[in-house]
Length: 218
DNA sequence: CCCTGATTCGC
DNA sequence: GCGAATCAGG
Image 1 (cartoon, rainbow, N blue to C red):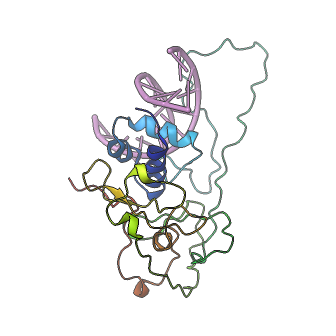
Image 2 (image 1 turned 45 degrees about the vertical axis):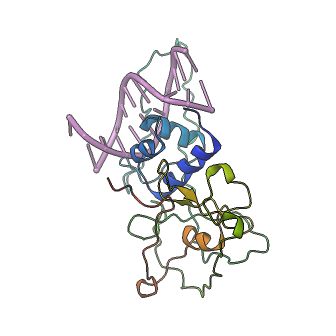
């Protein structure tokens, strides 16, 4: 199974959405959990909350994870080149609000939404103080006429919302298809979900659905 | 044992 | 670039 743009996009969405590699592998189909992880790393996606985590207050002793395979002939007195970088977590800056109509959208800071509707935080992103609930008014995204039906992945392009609706592989699976919020992969409405700022509970009505339609119910 | 992600390395 | 094998850890 090849990694098409679409599959990669789904991988990203799911990975950032908090799905485990196994789940993603199942959803995508045709790939193993390892393939998903490997691809995710190659894509630059990196280290979400993983079971193997650093201990707090205890500097992580860097040790090679799995140097078990055929080891190259070691130089007798070769100084062991230290592992370059332990991959410092890029701290995820708090997103004050999703710009409804960004004049020039900079790097969109992605705050993925966890299963419970909470906003994910990186492990090093402890400073939880919720950003002041910004007045956020979303313009209702109206479907354009041409996507009155369904937007298949064949219809995807740079200008339409790639928010997945339903589950891949199902007959009714399609994409949002509304014109995108310029600079983002999603329409204004879905940007509001993808880049949603933390709001006080009382202001959070419906639990935001996961981008890919939520965990598969089997 | 199950699960998780991380890493390596032959292909 | 890909992913199986293998690792460390919960």
